[in-house]
Length: 238
Length: 238
DNA sequence: CATGGTCCGTGACGGTGATCACAATGGAAA
DNA sequence: TTTCCATTGTGATCACCGTCACGGACCATG
Image 1: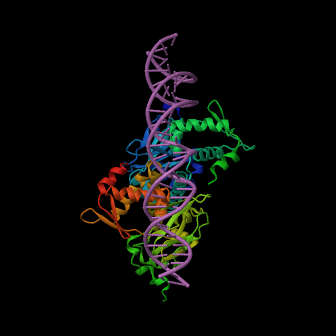
Image 2: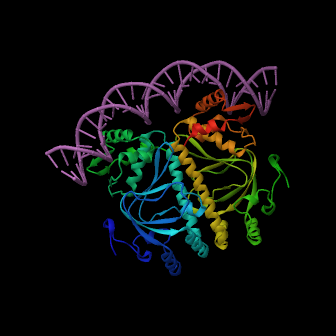
Image 3: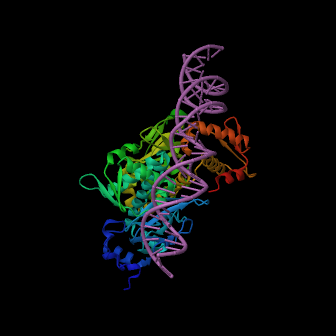
C-alpha cells in the first residue's frame, strides 16, 4: 500500500494502535468486525478540511493519525479554535447523532489519516448495537463537558493573561515531568493561540514576552518549558 | 393533595401536560409506566437549588412547572447564566450520563415542581430500554448545540450591544406576532441579563437606554416590546 | 544569492466598557 | 403611611487591549 504524505496507512481498525483507548474500543468481536466493514479510510494533506461548519452531516471521522483543529467563525471573519483533536478522537459525532449541520470546521493541521463512517451506516449500527449507543451518549456528554470548559474560559476568565495561563496549564498537565516542570513542543502559531484564547496575535506576542520576563515560561527553540505551575495557577484563580 | 406555593401538584407523568413535547415522550406503555414508577416529585420555592455546580450527580430533574436558571461561577464570584430552563426540560442529564459533577447550578427562579429520577434507576432504565438511550444521545447532542451557541456568543460577538441584540432576538422569536413585532414579559433583573451576556449591570442599564432611544425596543411596565427585528439583526451580523 | 512569504516583536494611540459613587425609583412589609 | 431593601439610572474616571504600523527573523524556492 502506498504511503502518500510520508504516512503509513492503517487499514484495519481491529489492529489500530489507538483503538484501545477510545470510543469504539473493546467492542464485541462481531460489532468490531461490522464497524470495520462500514468504515472507509483516507489520507489527508495539511490544510485539508474534513468538514465545514454549516454543512449537513455526511458522517463521522475517526482521526487515526495527525492533528486537526476544530473552529467556528463569524461572518466578519473572526475565528475561534475550540479544540485541537488528536488521533483517536471522533469528529462530527454530535452533528451526525442530532442530524444538524456540523457546528465546527475540522481542518488538518498536519498530514494525517482518518476513517470515515457514513451517517446512515453509523445510525443503523447504533440501533443494532444498543450497548454502543450508551457509549456514544457518554462520549457526547464528555464533549459537552469540554464545551462547558470553553464557556467558563470565555465567559468567566476576563483577561487574556488569565486565559493564556489556563492554556499553558492545560498543556503542562499533559506532559508533566516528575519534578513538576514540563516541556511542550510548540506547534501552534501565535495567531492560532490567539484564536484559542479569543484575543489578537499581538496580545499573544506580548503575553509571551511578559511571561518570559516573569520566569513563568522559557523557550528553547520551539520547545516550551513551563516550570512555575503554581504561579500560573495563581493567575488563573478561577 | 396539598398545593404549597400556590401550585397544583402533578403526580403522574402519564398525564402531564408537557410530556408530549419532550424527551421521555411517546414511550411504549411499558417504559412510560416504569419511568413513572422510579420518579419522585417535589415542589420547590423560589430560590431553591436543585443542584449545585461541582456536586456529584444524584440524578436528573424533570422540570414540570416554574423556571430555573442554570449558571456557573468562578471563585471570585463572577457568574454567568447559561440557560433559563422551562417546564419540560431535563436538568442534570449530562452529569448523570457521564458520572461527572454537575457542570452548573440549577436554581428555581419562581415556585415550581420537578420530578427527580435517581442516577442508578435512570441508567438501569436506559440499559433495559435501548431505544431510549438513543433518544438520550439525541438530547445530549441538542444540549451540545446550545452550548456551542453560547460559545459563539461569548467568543465571537465582541461588544455587549451585539450580545444584547442577540438576546433580544432570541426572546423575540419565541413570542413573534403576525405583524413581526413581539411582546415579552420581562422577568429578569438587569443584573441577571448582565450575567447572561457577560457584562455588568450598569452596561445593561445603558443598553436599555440606548436601544430605547434608537427605537429598537419599548417598555410598557414590565412588558418589553420589540418592533424592529431587522435593525437588531443588523447589529448582530454574525 | 536573491526573493517572497509567513510569522514574530514592539511602539503609539484611542475607544470601550469596568469600576466606583450616589441618587432615584419602586415594591413589600410592618 | 413609613421604612427598608432591591433594583435601576447615570455621571466621571481610567486601565486595558484592539488596531494600525513597521521592521526584522526565518525559511523555502528559484
